[in-house]
Length: 253
Image (cartoon, rainbow, N blue to C red; front, top):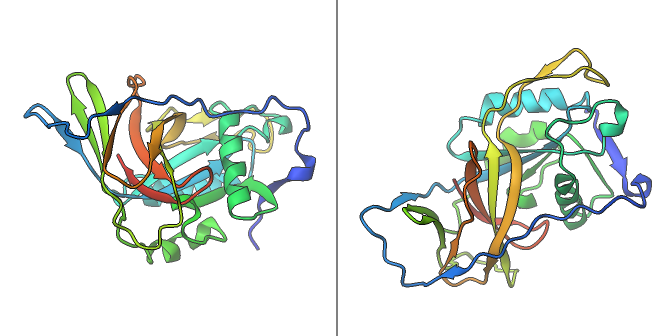
């Protein structure tokens, strides 16, 4: 039986400063924006794999290694690694930890009706596909469907624009979705763990999420959104998600 490091809500500190995702609502771009010859269009529909883990959790390295080996170079998938902070109390403070990712994982737990959050956890397309363990990924991804939403990331001299196409999927069960810009560090330096459960282990990392910004709301019609300035040395992807902890309707990077 797989060992999972768990933390139950009843044991969550009662008075932490509640983390909130920094939200920037970008100005919408006129829908009749005309692409110029200098535009560069990046559009790559992908299945999104969100890994929640901690450098202080000794159950995490096998999942991390598996995902890096099998999915970090797979163009059909986008691996995003969120380093949580709730295991920092075990003796090692995660060097990439961010309380915002604790909150994002709790949003998924609430949406998926889970009693607790745990590490390692992999969420596929915002919970759109049921996943009991990261070891189930090959089976689940074998059932991958066709991307339901077209997203273009357009690079111009004045910056980036995200164009989200009209919704054409079936069984729409959402009113408004969030358009998210996610910046991640593709291959940071390996980290030597000096204390805690993984003491003496050097851990690799891939696609470590460092910032997440809400660009605006998507309600099903074709729409464009401006993207804030780039984060130096980081890559960007765009997710369209049906609310907090909801299904990811489309993604591009």
